[in-house]
Length: 414
Image (cartoon, rainbow, N blue to C red; front, side):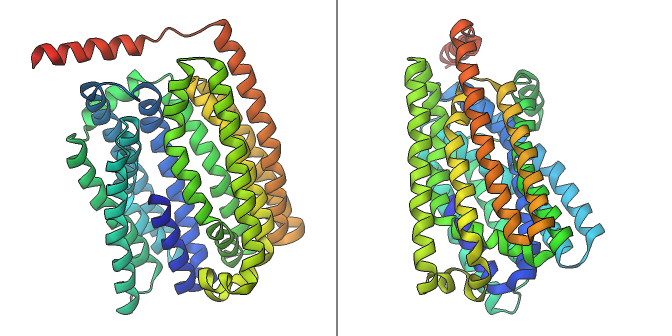
């Protein structure tokens, strides 16, 4: 539901505003990705790894700190977005201004989603994202009908609807985000949080640096076309992100049983996702010239069509490396996971920039896809090394002891 909401937003903006303004929206959107991955690294990843399938009292205590951390990141990122919007000005500045105003709500809503899945309460996440969609879609249509088809208002409607979901999430969880507990959260999980922050933002820097660099080299329209090709993969990404919500908690559960089960799970996840990405990409290549392209992107589809094949290859590479990333997270191998993300990010950005300089928009996407497959090899090598280290030196799970003691204390108090 969350991925569907974002897909519909991107498709609506592409059809309504054209390549240049959609390029400005794309810059704001990838910057949102940078913020959300910072929040996930500091708040969500430790929650999923250490508080999946725990008792409700321990989960609620963890949620207060994790959600507070998400708000803290959102406020800091929002202030930067507002300042950047004022300095940049123009269409791009408006997009950044709207993003800055709504980023705290966007990040808090995202943290609730993962928190609910950590507690095996996925139905709460589905309800929350459905409310977001039911508010956002009519708001976008109303803006267009009333003559406010502008990137500022579209981003504001999207982020404002997410903020409603953020408030609803607090009622669903019966937990209030705590900025005071966020400091304790950051300190308690300092062995994971900073490394996952670097990993997630480093990985997201691929999209951000690619977009900023391509804008500088080729202009906003080129960024809009690259993002439009990504939008065409949106229906598959709905499946991808939906599966990703449950993989880390499930992998952590399987690791408690055996390393072999974890390895098989990671392999099966990567192979299954890669084959699904291939199937959807082939469907796009066949169906876009027969009406699907105009339905999804309007007049932009013809200029976007040559980018579909390299975009499909890039998404397949992401899927092929997903299993390795899941395994590294389940093992708590934050240092290896961080190194993997940074190395892959550097390779992909270098490929995208070189391609843009030599062969233009299509060259940028093709070389980025080739670099992403190099990253797949790096990721699986890192997982192999991490599994060896875990077998030789299994970590003492002091968090389980802490959780159990906390639950007993709550029981006594009750």
